[in-house]
Image (cartoon, rainbow, N blue to C red; front, side, top):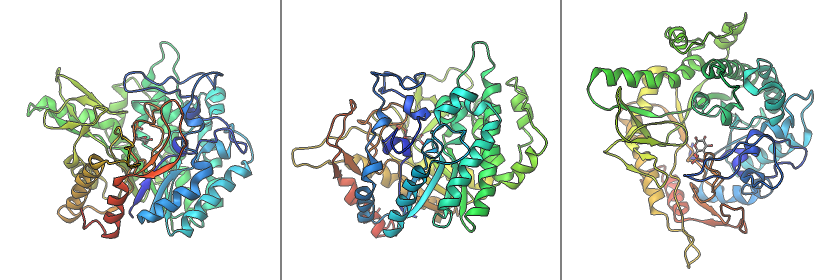
Length: 462
Ligand code: BG6
């Protein structure tokens, strides 16, 4: 499945239209590579929140989908914004206007022969749930999420055949507010809160899988994780051990979502962090029932593990490690490593034996709209081509089953980590700047034409 990917809060805008409530994304101010975003206590007057208008996909989706169709997309990944459906998160009934929007969106995609791939939760927790329940630290979230999932699945399940439960579910351990709305009290054991919240998300994911079987029979439901391929810095055995220890918080999630149970090492791993999970009767059975059909991954970069001071640090938006001297970096310092994607696919295939969908990959870069009214971005197509060659090698030389490729931000959108517009991933340029100024006009980049050819030739042109 060739296509592209975005997330609701990074493209839709219309943050308070048609009954939508605020989400965690709507309290994130604009930042940059140097200045971190602030996650304010509610929406505060006078502050600039890039998600509030984003790139106005909510009103322009028809135009955007026509452009995706022109590129030959067969799949489009986006998310359903929970707070469009349940504005505060804990209502008894869904907001009909919110469901109507996704209904129209799905129909528009299908009319263009594009398959919707829908993520139920992509960094969008209704802010009301953060205020009233402390978000995912509270077990009641499982039921709120199940109610939300049921509403979405009941409405769209007949037309959507690929679902993902939580975006980058493993990000919670490194970046707890954005994926899970977690805030901490002073002196609290953060790991205890994080892993309990993660347990609630795993239960919620299992509930969503069960509901999908009921309301969207025959559909495929995936888990989704960010995959930071990790190298031991040297052949020192301690570096190899350090690498395993760095990967465990990531592997924990597919272990549960694919195998339906915590792995044998989980208890000792959690004990080492001073964490004892509150496991209740029925949890184990639910996890065992709610296993997924496939693994969705985002892959952007790799990192290095060392048991000692390994030198300079290199960081992406969530995962980080030591700098790798063999790799170049993006404008935001992310290490570019196409071969690391082949390794990621192999590692996941060896461990979990499930089909893998590369639902995010791409290059965040500064683009220039030149006098000829175009964006010449050979760096983007080179990045994507290099990664596609490694996917091809994983499929043909290593026997990995790869279901599809949906590069990130096919349409320029608000950066999740920095809130910038100038950190662009798209094949389609959107005229909007970091301060929210611009006509929102869409312009085909050179990479648009390049990707159209890639899809038309089934990848052969790469
Ligand atoms: C992934 C997220 O981590 O990376 C996306 O799922 C995000 O939401 C993407 O936009 C790129 O990261 P960023 O921080 O450059 O926008």
